[in-house]
Image (cartoon, rainbow, N blue to C red; front, side, top):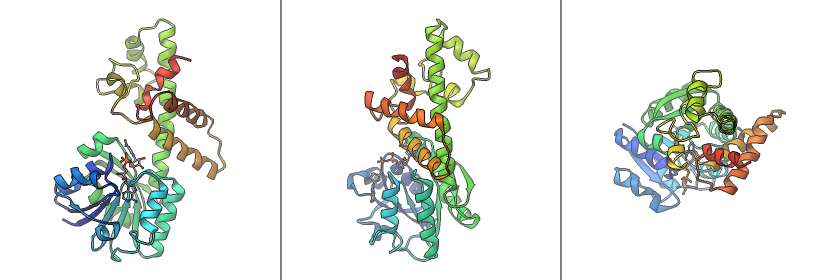
Amino acid sequence: MVDIAFIGLGAMGSGMAVNLAKAGHRVFAYDLVPAALDAAIAAGCVASPSVAEAVDQVDFVVSMLPTGAHVLDVYQGPDGVFAHIRSDTVLIDCSTISVDDARAVGEAARAKGFMMCDAPVSGGVAAAAAGTLTFMVGGAAVEFEKAQPILQAMGKAVIHAGQSGAGQAAKICNNMLLAVCMIGTCEAFVLAERLGLDAKAFFDIASQSSGQSWSMTSYAPVPGLVPQAPSNRDFTNGFAGALMLKDLRLALEATHGVGMTAALALKSEEIYSEYILKYTPNRDFSGVIDMLRNK
Ligand code: NAD
């Protein structure tokens, strides 16, 4: 059992920190908003009054923060992680941030002699609470080996994607594909409806044909087809359209960095921007079918 500082106990981080405590680790929790710590404290985590006091003397730091700017500030700021850890503390950032920011903070860590991994997740709030996240990890082999047992206490799969930044690269490529695929799936259901084809009949056929995808068989945007899909609960408690838009923008930023034009990702960004304005930012991303139905 080891000592772990956990920074950022929001929708995802609170469940993750609780799972580390349940695994028997001593978890020092810190969030800017004290109330965010309540669930973690109830589950046995120790509240810390600052980043400095949370990370002082721990074996690992795990962070789950909103954006790259938060991550750079928490690690590199004057009272941040780098300024207060022991030389052998291993750093794991699980936030979804740009590949460039992940590489920058990873390089800054290594320049100071620290080990650091980027380890963004697939799976939402329910998977964070259940300990069934998938982690995609960027870092050297030795860094991955150190981080792996800690990540295993919070997830069902821990995969080494490659060197620093590769975890974030895998995350944004996956979600770029998911956005395009979901919009295509929604358009196919809308066309089927307009052609008078029964949604269940279309689902049964496409699920076993070349149109099959995760968006279809695990997350169908039409209710009554896949029991756990957010379409059955009016698109609540799913993967927020605003978070999909965030990930799409990170993917587009990366395409600019490598001189690539991703036409379908660009169009998806336009569609999700309109979607979160017309509906609510928290509504599940598969609910975009309602907007496409009205076009
Ligand atoms: P959230 O906004 O609910 O939580 C973020 C927490 O970080 C908040 O409690 C906030 O107070 C805290 N925070 C911000 N700045 C801080 C600082 N300087 N020091 C300490 N705490 C600070 O966000 P979330 O939904 O938990 O998402 C976290 C990350 O996980 C994001 O990068 C998101 O893109 C990614 N992600 C989210 C989901 C999801 O379904 N929510 C799924 C996969 C990945």
